[in-house]
Image (spheres, one colour):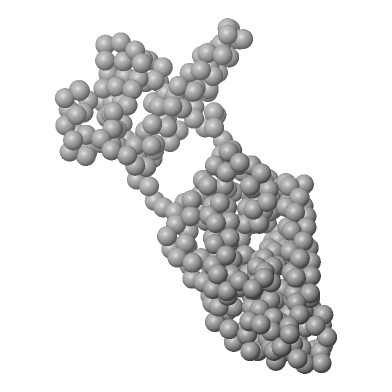
Length: 374
């Protein structure tokens, strides 16, 4: 048995597809992700210059709000009161990023789209939200004093930055969770190699293995064990690289992340074994199937578009319940972001059931194969 395990392992690591796609490619892609936006949250954004044009019927509430924003966040906005003509010239010359027209209803004029313009719009929206909040409170508490109202106008009192489960939420970490899910699914190349390695009608090596006196069940089991182990090691290497080399903010317990990686590796390898065991389809067609499934699954989990997983959740939530990449990335969210152990275990159980079904189906398809001649 040990001899078979050693032979199976050595034959796999000599295969380019088995080494490159599940191990090297995710490491390279993770590095590209890191340099593309890994540290975007640490970017040094400059103060946003904005012109303020007062009209005859100036909204004093908005002016007071801008004053409070300037006091509580002096590095956020650089406000300068101008006439309309001066403000338009400054906007055209890009000396300011926008113009606040303070009339009966405050409005914003910008010359483009970007982070600075978004900040200005957010301030305006925040003011309106604050106005609504205070109006509702005043209806219930008409005797509220001026000091309390002033505190309500303070951005610090209205919004406090917190994290779910005591952890910081990085909007870009979802790409790396989807990357880990992709690496798990790329274990399908390892499982695929195992499946065709014991089918005598596909490769000469498989034909030689099938005529040996070794029981076929033993061949299948050794290939499954080495495939699972190799796929798991590949994902562990990626996880350690992201956390300790690229220093990504994976704050969850390492043990739980390894458990997720284990089940993720199982589903990837199982998928490859199942597709590799399908009928007498050409090898190239089978590779196309497993590659297509892996990439579509990763895409729906948010690998290319960070909002895709949420879009699927709103429109077709059932897809996220059966998509292995979504289940893997969601399990990482459960332990690194929002501490939802019920959802975490649900994801793992779903992955485990899918693995069992795929492995059993692969086993019965391969075991019943008979050859008239080899």
